[in-house]
Every structure is written in structure tokens, then in C-alpha cells.
Amino acid sequence: MRATSQCRVCAGTVHEFFDFGRQPLSDAFVDRAGAAEEFSFRLATGICASCSMVQLMEEVPREEMFHEDYPYLSSGSAFMREHFGRLAERFRTSELAGPDPFIVELGCNDGIMLKHLADAGIRHLGVEPSGRVARLAALKGINVRNDFFEESTAKSILAAEGRADVIYAANTLCHIPYIASILRGVTTLLAPDGVFVFEDPYFADIVERTSFDQVYDEHFFFFTAQSVQAMAEHHGLELVDVERLPVHGGEVRYTLALPGSRSPAPAVAGLRAEERTWRLSEFETLQRFGARVRENCEELVLLLTRLRDQGKRVVGYGATAKSATVLNYCGIGPDLLAFVCDTSPTKQGKLTPGSHIPVRPPGEFTESYPDYALLLAWNHAEEIMAKEQGFRDAGGKWILYVPEVHVA
Ligand code: SAM
Ligand code: TMP
Ligand code: ZN
Image (cartoon, rainbow, N blue to C red; front, side, top):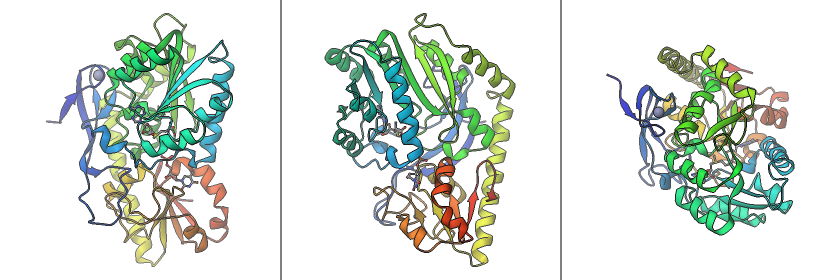
């Protein structure tokens, strides 16, 4: 019998389809191996038989993940800075073009998006529970509330600021298991003709690209147009637009509104129809995905072991949260990867969670190129490969494991 749990969206039954075993927290970089016992939990994914929402079987308490020392800095990618700059401009000239507009962003992190709207003088508020990144946003002149967004937060924002024309969240909504409270907060705070816009990794892209490392503690939900539409209806909202995005390995930007306030764009029915042809909510599709995950992991370990035995120097590139799943599920440690380089000062000098590989600044990569680099930040491949052209020019080779294991 496969394990079941209760759906956090509709209270239906969630059936498990993949078990990654016990895993550490993906962003809990450690000072020294053995310095303190690392938190671990069972990382497993399931699908709700009623509303089709794909979700984790076990939840990690939010304070374990999002706290003063949360190390992820959104502004580390030039490509993402441009992405959010374009979106801010779109908001400014459309949804926020009326008199005295107001936008609330959940999970504004270091202010990568809101900075543009703050600079343009638009009334805004970022809600960000992680202390250090919230302060980085405040230093950029952004109004930040250092708090978790939930129903009670929405009520107090409403009392202080009035209704929001836009509520926005990027790579944040999928992090929140207590989604019912969030959606009650959204319906409380949203202006009658306002929009709730969020963008997160698209489950169809994860299945298509076998990008299994999108599964980690912080990614609780894996959205599709089907499951988001069901979630919206269940919680008094309507899905009115969808847009596929070429960021973070494939995402969708969903627009929700109060029912009847907007007519749904044709893209909604279009994506729903495509999803039916992909049979995304069928258990066989998910089991085939699981089989590919196991094969890819075996191949990756074989390749890294062979390179080590041949005396090649191999390092990792990008100490992503995603890499915690790959490294720990595959059992890749410092014997196979000498170090992982990463631009985040918050991660440098520490060890990767669970796998205990040293994290070094990118200078160590460029000073003495390895023979191979495992691209753990594969979602930033274009940006990183362009920046590190010198590595290839010096004869270095990239190893990728999405969509399959290959050397490029
Ligand atoms: N929006 C940024 C981006 O796309 O780069 C940051 C994404 S980061 C992966 C997720 C952020 O959500 C973290 O900064 C975390 O502190 C924040 N977060 C987690 N739970 C939250 C909640 N209930 N309300 C608001 N923010 C939350
Ligand atoms: P993400 O995939 O969650 O956005 O995390 C990307 C990680 O990779 C983050 O720790 C920063 C790091 N990184 C680099 O080290 N170099 C780069 O050029 C980019 C874009 C990211
Ligand atoms: Zn459900």
C-alpha cells in the first residue's frame, strides 16, 4: 500500500508517487561537518485524487526554513533582474496605472522586483519573513514588513493601507503549505477588480525535463493550470490568465481574480487542453517520471565515479537549493566534487547541507579551471555558460543532468 496524506488545498486524498528518502533542509548550509545535528525529514511527492494538486507528503515547519539567516539572494542573477524589471514595468503601465495604486508582494526577498516600483514612487509593501533579505530590500528604499503573509497579516495590511490592486508572489506561493490561509488573505485584501499574480515552477516542465531536483523542502506545491484552477474555485477565486515563462527551468505565471470580475483569457482553456494531452494527472505518467529520475541519478553517479577514477578534477557550479536533492539523493559528496562555487556570500565558506561539500567563491573556479563542472544551477545555464566562456576555451566541459545526463 502506498502512503497517503490529506490535500492542503481541498482535503482530498493525496497518493504518494515518489520517495526521495530522508533529506536535509535545502538551504541549511552548515559551518562544519558534525558541528550540530542536521534537521532531516522524509521528502516525498504525491498527487491529490480530487483536485490533482501535486504536493509534498510531509511539511517542514516554516520557521526552520525562513528565518534571519535564509541565504537565498534573488538579485544574484542578471537574467532574473531583467525578468523582474520587465514585469515591474508591465505592472506600472497596466494594473498600477490608475490613481494611487497599491501593490503587495509576498516573498519580496532582497527587493529584486519591488525596487523598480519603489523607484517609480508607487505605493507598495513587501512581506518577507526572512530577516536578512528583508533588510537588504529595506536598504533599497522598499517598504518591507518582516513577517509571514497569511490571513491575519492581510487583515492588518488592509486596515493600514486599504485594498491592493495587485498582490504578487514569485517563487513563493509554491513554498506555502498553509495555502488556505493565504487565499483567504488574498480575497480579504484584493480590490474588487484587482489581480493576484504568482509565478512558480510548472509541473508539466518538471515531468517533461525530468527536473526532479525542483523537489525539495521549500517547494511544497507543484502547480498546473488544472490544479490552480481547482484551487482558485475551491477558495473563492477564478483563474483568468496563464503565461508560460522561460525562467528557472520553466514556470507559469498565473493570474487570479475575484469571480466574474475579469473574463478569462483564451490561454487558460488552451493550456488546460494541452495538459489533458500530456496526461499529467495520471498515475502511470508519474510512475514513468519516477523511473526516469532513478535512471538519471544512476547515470550521473556512474559518470562522476568514472571521472574521479580517471583522475579528473570535477567541481559543482551553483550551490542551489535544488542541488541538495541531487547531491543527497544520489549520494554525491566531496569525494566526487572537490567544491561547489557560488556567488552568494551567505553560502561561501560553508558546507552543502547533508552532502558536506565546501562552498567557495567563483574566483576559485576561474583561478584554476577544473576538467569538468557539474552545473547544479542548470536553470541559469545560458547566463553562466556565457559568463564562464573562458572555462570552455581552456578545454573545460560542463556536465548537465537535466533533461538527461550529458556532457556539453
Ligand atoms: N520572489 C523572490 C524570487 O522570485 O527570487 C524570492 C523567492 S524565495 C525562493 C522565496 C521567498 O519567500 C523567501 O524570501 C521566503 O522568506 C519567502 N516566504 C516564505 N514564506 C512566506 C510567506 N508566508 N509570506 C511571505 N513570504 C514568504
Ligand atoms: P536558484 O537556482 O534557486 O536561483 O539558485 C541559484 C544559485 O546559483 C544561487 O545560490 C546563486 C548561484 N549562482 C551563481 O553562483 N552564479 C551565477 O551566475 C548565478 C546566476 C547563480
Ligand atoms: Zn486536493
